[in-house]
Amino acid sequence: MIPFSLDSVHSIFCNGAGLAGNVFAFVLFISPLPTFRRIMRNRSTEQFSGLPYIYSLLNCLICLWYGSPIISPGIILVATVNSIGAVFQFTYVCIFIVYADKVKKFKMLGLLIGIVCTFAIILFASLKLFDDPSRKLFVGYLSVASLISMFASPLFIMNLVIRTKSVEFMPFYLSLSTFLMSVSFFVYGILKDDAFIYVPNGIGTLLGTAQLGLYAYYSRSSQEDSREPLIVHIRE
Figure 1 (tube, one colour):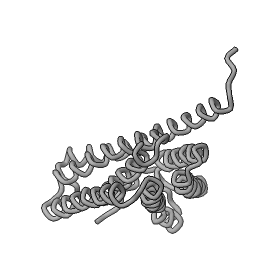
Figure 2 (figure 1 turned 180 degrees about the vertical axis):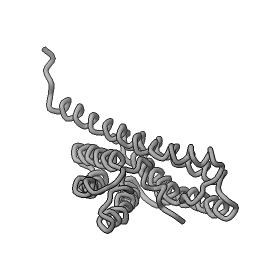
Figure 3 (figure 1 turned 90 degrees about the horizontal axis):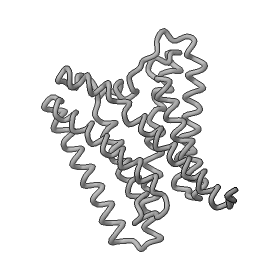
């Protein structure tokens, strides 16, 4: 029998939580695929908005930078999930730009350039203006602010559910994946003793719990359950 030390058990649970978070995040990243298949099939973005993908791209880039070994050694699973997320969000933005009308095309292109410039400024400032301890604080606070704003974005959908007494615009599996991803990274952050991970994901867990509670309460009165991701219902 191979003895297990407390450190090895801690490492197993920590890596397991991080890997689970990566898997559930991947489900979220692929959830807009039906929307973009429709956009490409119709060769038009119709009334869909590209703003959520722009915001998600910036969030992934900031969190990727925080999880990189340069800033925070030892939390590579944060870097992996956000690198995958950044690729997906960048692809979605590019597809949106290709098929958008002229006004939206230039607006989205300008926002994309703005995101690239903003991230470049963050990279420059964190590398040139801060030493190692303060660099992690600087990028960590930015990542927390970005994650909290992302987790808070479904609040208007929750308000819509309460007003309409219908879960039509709050797909169950999307809400469940968000909740499970938040729980996984909350546990990962606790085990890594990293407040910049467990604080925003703890908030995400609470909001995810509230979403699932609303779904359970109002699903009985809903006529149908939309299978499209929430962001497709957001208009410019």
